[in-house]
Image (cartoon, rainbow, N blue to C red; front, side, top):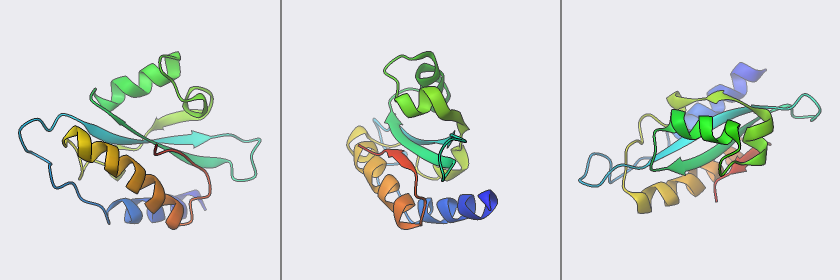
Length: 118
């Protein structure tokens, strides 16, 4: 079951593209983190964020509690770079737009627990 919804999430992410990828000043990234909370009916979920830092470093910051999403701090398992590697890096304005668009695309693909995407 989990593999099926991860495949749906990957397909949804591939519908997006970054027009500013590779341009001068393209130093921002969007990232997706796998969440797991066995107390929830839909125990597996995704968090979508954007950063000017390396996404691995940003994940570590979440887990340490620095400017952290509560969901990631408590339930974050790992990054899912395969969902966003075709987008990164990009300009800041586009990272902000794609963060929201990616979260919406994931919800549209039937992923019931999606956090972030501000």
